[in-house]
Image (tube, rainbow, N blue to C red; front, side, top):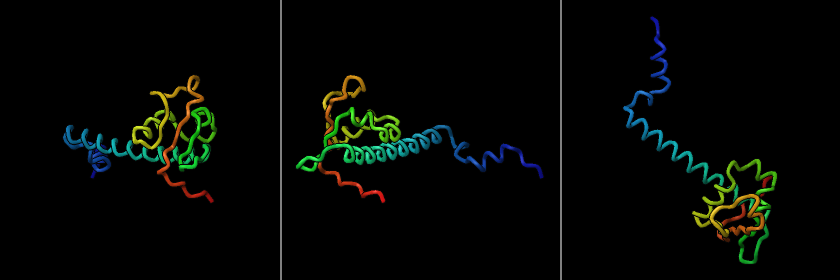
Length: 125
């Protein structure tokens, strides 16, 4: 018996043979979930980095300047889009900062404040 390569594709990728409308909506839902999960993970990492680099205030909030975050080597390697992650966290009311968008050259001294409702992540062993 000879197997045609088409059958291999059907068994490997059954979603490829769904009607086009169903296929695109499945992919969009999967992509939306993956993006949401990635954004949430990046925000959690950002919270930890602000707590690591920032100054803790009496009310439990943390403050750090954008320049400190932007120039930190660990943050530089961790975040593909630091500004996008900051904006996503601000939309979720996790942190605050002045202005619409932070740019490296112009906004080094802008203070980013992490609101006090976020627990300190466990210390790495």
